[in-house]
Length: 150
Image (cartoon, rainbow, N blue to C red; front, side):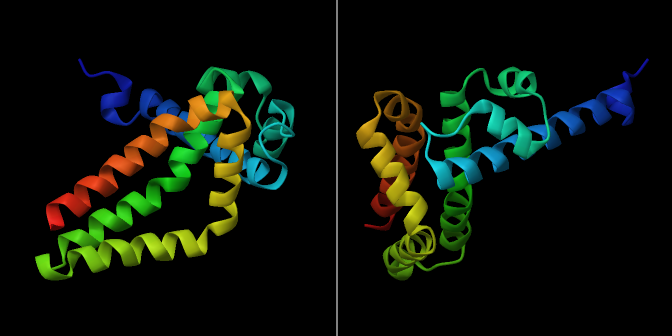
């Protein structure tokens, strides 16, 4: 006998609702972190903007620092995808130029947010710990892409 989620029933619907709620929380958090900074953004403010309970935030993310790290990871996701997509269709000779073009576009389009991330990392050990895995992963991907090109 199949479970409800295998037939697209209750389990699949619940999984979808969780994903939608998580996405709303992440969008709200990133917007508020960008506007107010980490220290001046509360879980209550994020919950209100996302139209969820505080408990939902803690259930999905555990704490504000983890939510921050997840929000930043989501912020950088398009950059990683652009790198991957662009590198699939580029000749080896043009790869390095293309990698830097994607990087330059992303930084130019998101300079205020990136400056805020750097400032937060420099000012807060808690944020440094939350951001370190995301930034190291991004750096490693970039390094590997450049290494393959050379």
